[in-house]
Length: 314
Image (cartoon, rainbow, N blue to C red; front, side, top):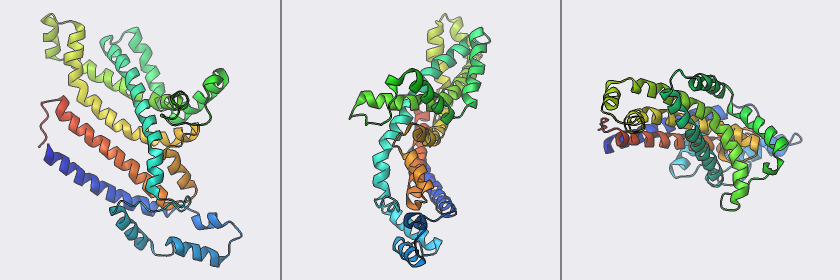
C-alpha cells in the first residue's frame, strides 16, 4: 500500500508539472494585455513598458515560466497583478466557500441518489423505475448553471424571504450562510445525483442477479440484509469510482455556480482572473484545484483496499 501511495504521489507531481506547462503558456495566449487594462487606453508606450518590466512580463516566456516554477517549489504561487497580494493567500481565503459548496452538493446528491438508485434496482421495470429513468436523463442533460438560474428565479419570485444577496461565513452567521449556499449546492448536486442514480441502479441490478445473492435469499435472509450487507458492499467500489470522477465535475461546475449566486469562492476568483488577464492568479487557481482533485482521487484509491479486501495494492 505504501509503495502504491508513493507511486501515485510521484505520478501526481508529474501530472501537475505537465499541467503547469499547459496552463502557463495557454494563459499567455489569451488575447489582451493586463498592463494595458490596468493603465487604461490613454497610457503611453513608456508607461506600459515600465510596468511590464516591473512585473517581469518583458522577459521571454520560458524565462518567466522558469522563475515561476522556482517560486512554486518554495510554496510561492506568485503575486496577483490585479490585487497586489500573494496568490496563495487569496486562494486560501476563498477555498472554504468552495469546499463548503462542494461537500454540501455531494452530500445532497448522495442523500437523494442512493435511496432512489436502490429502489429503482430492487423494483426493476416497475412504474417507479420507469418514472425515474427519464427524470435522471433530464438531470444529466441540463447544465449546472441553468439549474442555478432557475433556482434564483424561483426563490426570488416565490420565496423572497430565503433569497440572500450577500454571502456570510459559516461561523459568522449559520442561518444566512445556509440560505446562500444551499440553493447553489442543490444546483450543483442535481447533475451528480442523476449520474449516481443511474450508476447505482445498473450496478445493483447486475449484482442482484449473481449466484451468491440467490444463495443468500435461499438461506432465508431478509431483503434488507441481502441488499444492505451483501449487494451494496460489492457495488461500493464501483460507486466510489464514479463519486471520485464526479468530484472533477463538481469543481468545474462550481466556477459558474459561484458566479451565478455571487459566492466568493475559488471558482469565481479564477474566472475574474481570466477576465482581467491576471496570469499568476489563473495559474495558481488552476493548479490548486487540480491538486485538490488529484488528492481526492488518491483517497478514493486508498479506500478501495479498505472497502474490498479482494483488492491487493502493492
